[in-house]
Length: 600
Image (cartoon, rainbow, N blue to C red; front, side, top):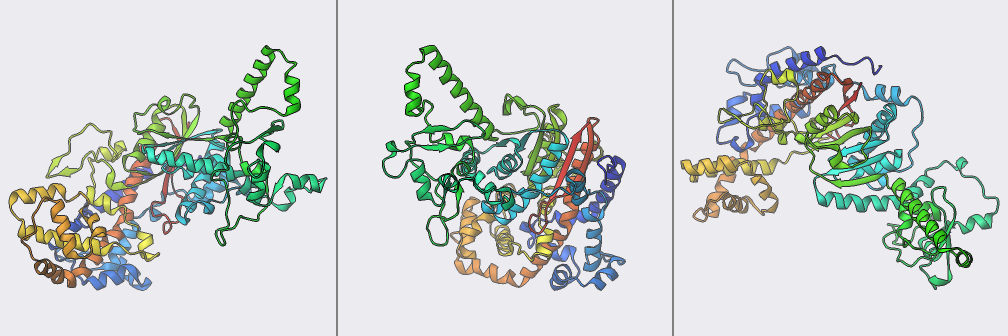
């Protein structure tokens, strides 16, 4: 594989056409709303087999049945689904792995990175959960590869959230990162997390160095003075145990001359404890490596920190001008070291496709823009920023939350939505010329985790969906006047189902939900409400099976959204190379595809 061997625009268009022709008919499954499942008798309208047949055919398919079913018809003469094996075969054929447009990650890494062994200084599993650790390690490596390939040192992380990717890019790969998030809470949390990580950065780096890289000290006793076996000794060396004024400690920065300074602040949150027994860790740290960066070390110093006594006596003989010059030089050097050490800068900003780079920072230069699970339109805006800003040379975007995308040609009540855009979907001129639209329910279906459900055996939130569907029956039968129906139609997307987690029973759920919708259910007895639950409980399997049909269709809808974004890049004159790459294990991280591009 070569970066020059690009997947062509014509091929991408042909696959989009194949998907739209397929989805023209199959979207009726994805767009069937769970809320209306019983009120519109969705199961009997669209499916001709039993729920058990659908469940077993999707979760426990037999290879021979699948092969036999692929050649058969999915639908019967009344256009109801009656062949689950054929359905699974055709949806699989229209998913991204089988469309022949994805660039293999292994090939891409081999070309960009070669056989070089990656040095993992900082273990993500130390401060991230398994899912996030997997995502950050894989994506940061590919971002670092492209940054090196494009000779870029600066990265703009859009929708950076808690800053995991940004921190790792800066510490593991030495990239200067601006982490942009619209949430002030996320930015504050990212700042605090980044500060703590910097303290432990050199500790992790030393722990992962091969023994051969650590030379034996010429004078063991002298080396011992620079090693700390536990937090108590660290405190003693920085003057926090005993009489602080009587002690000083030599701390070494990033290649700077040695500084001796009394410490007068508390140790704060830098203590490292053994989680098993609550005692201080007995691992050996070098004091200069413990602090990790000049920035962390300088937290303990005042800006006018005095020098050692002998230097103070020497300064008495310096004139005021020389003293001022030396002081200013020291402050400038200190500020420079802080800037160099703090490679990750969290910023609070609401980013759109029209955001100017000078709104992010005054010193933005040739950069790469990235986004790890950017929600809704933010993924589309990331690609537009890449296209329109000359300073942005490369992009790596992994989107999510497709239900939050704005659609240019979405239909509501048979009327086109009127708005100015720019739209999240479709992006490409090719798909826009078709006036294609998915619909919110279909985009919601695209978020369903196919591999996690079918291979990882993850459970869908079935009972909460069931509660909401039965609630709709109650609303229709007891609050069925036209005004109330219109109110429900407007509010049924207000996440009424979240009440489920605060409810002790279906009766309690119904009371809370109707109150939220502005309805009075006080005249309905608990027995009456419970009766609805008991009536539809035997049909709960229908709801489970139908949602599995949506799960199987999800990769096809997601594929269309992602191919539209890839087509958009390939339509641009200033893009030299672009690709759709599966970065993550879909069982660990269902939104696993990245759009990657480089400018000419």
